[in-house]
Length: 138
Image (cartoon, rainbow, N blue to C red; front, side):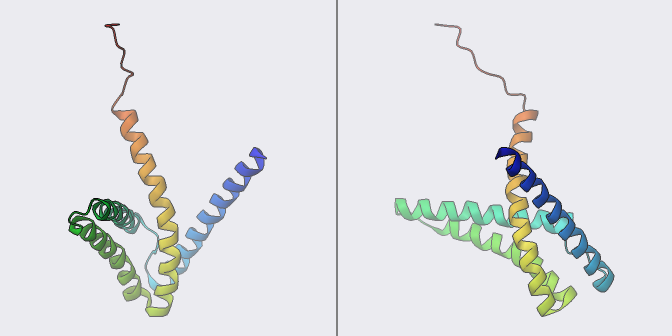
């Protein structure tokens, strides 16, 4: 069953990459605009991370009955980052096409953002050359 899961994940990744490439070809030929690029992926990832952290701050502040403004501001700024990408799509492709492709784009970027955060954490751990700590004074 593990092999089938691995094959399913690999096929899913392949189909996702194929979808992204075809959508980029479509938007490039019709609108002279690539909907999936590094810039929009980075801005979306930052927006999603800010929304997640802001939500976490907000709920912990509500539980502790303290000021919730920090969390609310982070959620707002993250939502502005995401909205800016959607606004660019609307301006380049029109409302209806921009809306439909923005929904697809935001769903894909949400998953990519999660993977990117874990990759950054792993890279930080790898490049910081962490070593186990040994207690000599036993």
